[in-house]
Amino acid sequence: RQAAEIEPGSAEAQFNVASIVFQEGDKEGCIAAPQRAIVLDTGYAPAYERLGALLRDVDRPTEAIAALQTGLKLNPNDANSWLSLGLSFDDLGQLEDAKDALDRAIEANPSFVEAHQNLGTVLRAMGRYEEAIIAYDRALALNPNSETAIANRALALLAEGRFEEGWRYYLTRPSIVKYGDRLHRTSLPDDLS
Image (cartoon, rainbow, N blue to C red; front, top):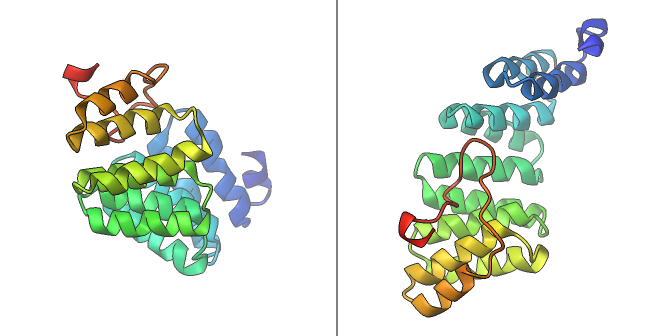
């Protein structure tokens, strides 16, 4: 915060305030920091990515999409922005757009485990179970201990009708962990938990 006060004209200093305010638990309040950074420097791409992610966190996906698309015009290879864009489209039920954005996140960073996992989740929601399983397999190749990928792979197997294999795979997970204050379609149905 001191840097932002010392350098009020620095987009980067204003941008960094968002992390501090977020850690304090004020999600709405931290949205102002990347907005100030954008006012100071409309070409500062990281501010758009942060703004988009924060807007999504407070359930404002339409605004998140607009911010992320602007940032991606400035930096089309930002895997985090593509991921956040895909998640925002998914929040709105725009699954084909979500899939396309997640594909771009993976293209920008082929080792991005979270992008592979979320691609699998979107494909599963589209009823494309075999493709979802492949996406989860890619996530697991990068991180064999990913409980999210393990659980979601099991759900895709079950949805595809491969009950024995799906249930067996589900039982291999060490535990199911809730991330943050919400799950992104990673929770298991009540009859499986």
